[in-house]
Length: 73
Image 1 (spheres, rainbow, N blue to C red):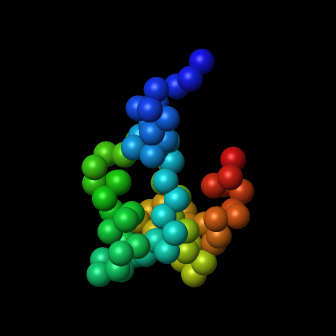
Image 2: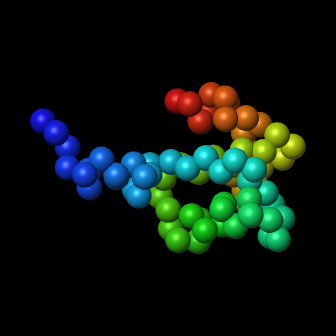
């Protein structure tokens, strides 16, 4: 059965997880804002900060690459 257009767009507008490429702990950077907004808005899905030089960002363990198995499971 064909899904409705609304159902097809759900992954875009209602994601279950978000990987933030270039996540940052520096408030002046976009990577910080992209991490902060989902946390501030009450996003309940998994949030994956991706930054090869940070161990954690905003208390969330950071992935060094999008190839990290924690993102791809």
